[in-house]
Image 1: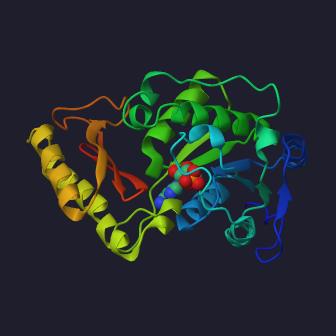
Image 2 (image 1 turned 180 degrees about the vertical axis):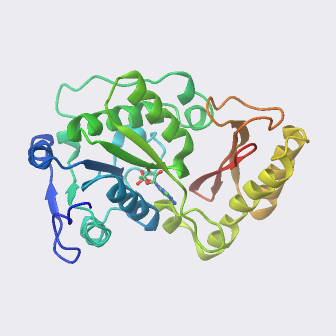
Image 3 (image 1 turned 90 degrees about the vertical axis):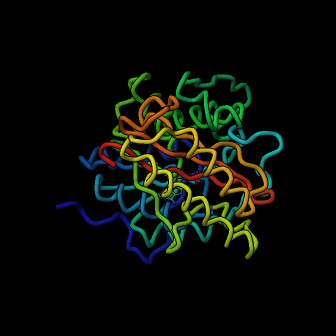
Length: 295
Ligand code: AMP
């Protein structure tokens, strides 16, 4: 049986802010023979993040969540400065979900003066988000590599909500021989299908209604294309029109790709993923769904 959590679920959560303090905590657990799980986040936590914490608790004896709004993964015209921040609220939610330690470093703890190294994982980071958010995955890959090496967890949990990000992280962990299990956790959704996201709080009441169109078109793509009998291209055109009609102001992509390589498919004749990125006003939403064999 797994040992009880380090803190009671109602007590205040311990917080560390430097790699050295994080390492000291984790080293003490390791000395006791405990398995450690890591859940990297940017805060503004919701039930999706807490599901990652619960999954990490199933796979490890102690769980560290990190909250770090990583400046290097935001483009110059993106929402870094207005990204929601609520450390006290996050700490309460994490404690309730069974988290043992919050790692909340400042920017200078992660990127001290003189820092220049970046991690570039190559092809899997190039299309889709990589195309529309230049530099984004280099920022993600670099910070996740640092977090994995700082915490040295046995397992790290990431959401399938950010499907390409998960593929990028699997690649870097394998390529850099980081001895960690990367666990992909299914997307947590609202009752109407909208994927939970910290950015949903930017949506007006009307946009919140319109947002559900993303999960609807993903379900339609799965139903239309999943048995491999129909070509992908017309279904993508149809899905794009549906999003435009629903009020999306800019559609970065609607794509159906190989689930492993993320290469575009003409027909769903193998495990695949449908992915959407689109704007409602200033708010960019992304979502994805498995389709094809095994889905
Ligand atoms: P973020 O704070 O947005 O960087 O997300 C931190 C982690 O939570 C990432 O691994 C995300 O994929 C994951 N995540 C975000 N939203 C959801 C969701 N609705 N369901 C499951 N995981 C999620």
